[in-house]
Length: 265
Image (cartoon, rainbow, N blue to C red; front, side, top):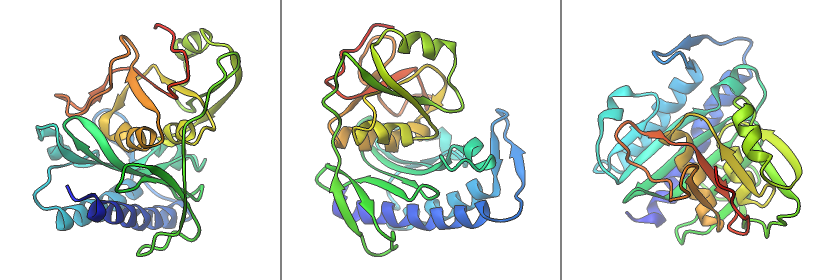
């Protein structure tokens, strides 16, 4: 994969999809349907998926594409592919809480190598450069021109008082039990893949996820975190979280700055 070509395409498509999402988000009303697994889907999910999928297929016709909203793509097999969640945090979108993101990533040999996470309602954009370094872009987010960027890096964590981030919609007792194994300075909740990005920028030290996620939920944020010096491991044995699994379902995991002294599950 030519990363110099890939990164601008992923970024531009994320911004285009984000604009469509915000158009619907700011409308008076929008329909909400339930998928076969009882998770919600809106016209914004579908519109964003159409924009991103068409753009990626046109730019990279020979690369396998997996996207949340196209169930036929879930039958794809391999460890190298593009993977998309066009609207991560649909519940946050429905309740107009703003913590939703557009996620696009490229996975090679089971590892998320490059990714883009765009939070249009928060005006935050994170992505990996061609050289692998993760950055946050600020400015107007023009489709065709990358604005001012700054490198992001994980924290040098103080294990005597850690900053924790956890799911806003899925924070349960199992999550609390694990968090309580640490000395916690402060804890915050966030939706969607923003949690990975908060660890990547050093705004949080660790994000434990004791709950169901799919690869399209995590790949872009995982890539951004890797490019900021962080890591994501399985909750049970602390081995790397990998991609291209049979049903694209993730085990529980921990995203963290390497300076954090991880506790056993």
